[in-house]
Image (cartoon, rainbow, N blue to C red):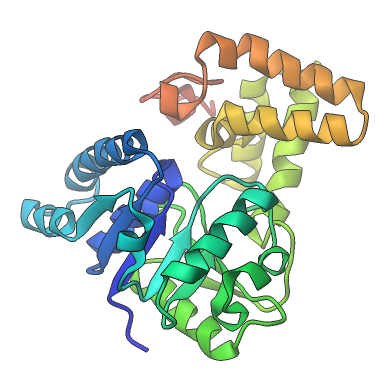
Length: 298
């Protein structure tokens, strides 16, 4: 099966990155979002990505122009998937929302279309039945930013046909990702299975008053050779996500300490507009965070 036409469902930060990277790699890309505002935001992201690729990644203006010509935008789902060979879904991490969406998508997409989810917390088997094509459904998970943290985690579920697993691995490679095959469902895939404990440990050290966030980042960066520490990573992920995870864990486990942490994140960061890289400030200020300074590790 040859993949030419790709549909990206969800025009948020990561969905917009996936769309740009895919179009830059030579594929026709349709970006779908339920709201016109979401599409306009995505177009704005793509203008910024064009500047990044020219100024930081050496892309020619001709390559950028061709990338832009391959991108289309719509809030009509039927139009978005009419000739899709593969779909990448990045809608909210809510099992009921995803089930409802996939039931609708199953009725509109051609039978040839492979469905992939970019979910980072939910497993494909949780809503495979709703896709109407469980054998052509699996996860293709991206990291942020897509072109630098260029792993494409491809995870099958028990009902995935290995033929489509291989096709998606090839697709990931063809859009500049390093394909990471995951043969068995694993919450957190490979990346988040490694990353979440790190970020959790970093937050525990900081919020329990053991050390300041810069010192924690320095310790990790010096000792492992990493280019970024846990709090720089948190800024990339965004404070809203960190808040939601803390609140969810606190509520689910009846953990007052974790709920207090969530409230502190909301009061001292989110309510003050310090959302991370997206807003220009989180733990660090951007576009020139302190951890990138030449003397930060001295």
